[in-house]
Image (cartoon, rainbow, N blue to C red; front, side, top):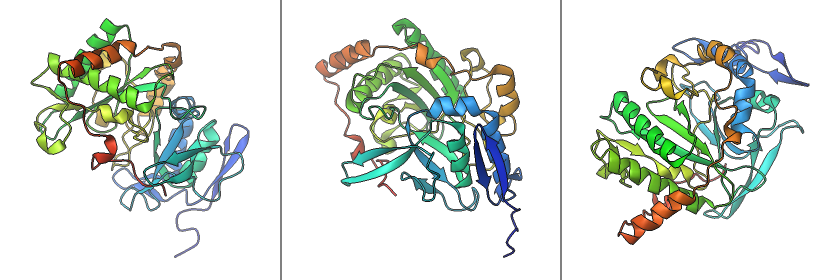
Length: 331
């Protein structure tokens, strides 16, 4: 193999840093022809947004060393060879009694260095480095089952918005980069992961009560109606992560998990929001999640809903580690 088959290394200026990008011409997305350098340039174009989404959060990396048609590596530990300015947070994983130092983004150069290490997707925790055990972000994941079209996801999102308004909570929606919608709500970091998950389940049950034909909170995937939308409260469990705002997804066209306005829900087409199209949108609209830290919601009403449901006989779901989608062993 020729030494420069994928292009000679380039140096990118990122703030006060210089990040060396090897194999810049390696094609990562065969359907579009987008390269490793294109991916880095995308993240540079949405720099403030991606840093705002990741800042101070433990972050798992989805790496594709041979491009998205190759094997995917779920990387919790910081890849070897990081410059000394790349920051981390040390985490303990009780299930395995292991520790891992995960990437903790504090500046855009760390994002670009992760791209150099073949990262396509960024999956942060819903808590920050100062106290990883106390989330400051409640995540509502509207996850359609195989026979649920996106129109159903839109309807569920609108009802979700109505309930948030009734609670006085400000939700920040984004496309998932796939077939769903994510909605984030900033919360005070005063509860553990278990209580935030419990609150998220109470909210999901309220959405289900209002839309019983469209929504499910059934734990086991095999037991869910395939035409419903699962309101996935488990994304609030410890060490369960989803792609961040502005993260590219590892699919053939490089869709982006893109912040949107509530008034866009009715018309948004997730496949139109890609690493090729989002930079122009970002240049026009800026970061639609920029002010999320200024709108904090106390989950006390949701915990009261949880008490009510449990008193009425609602069964608690199994702990997340009992699920087939449990958190992965650090590597």
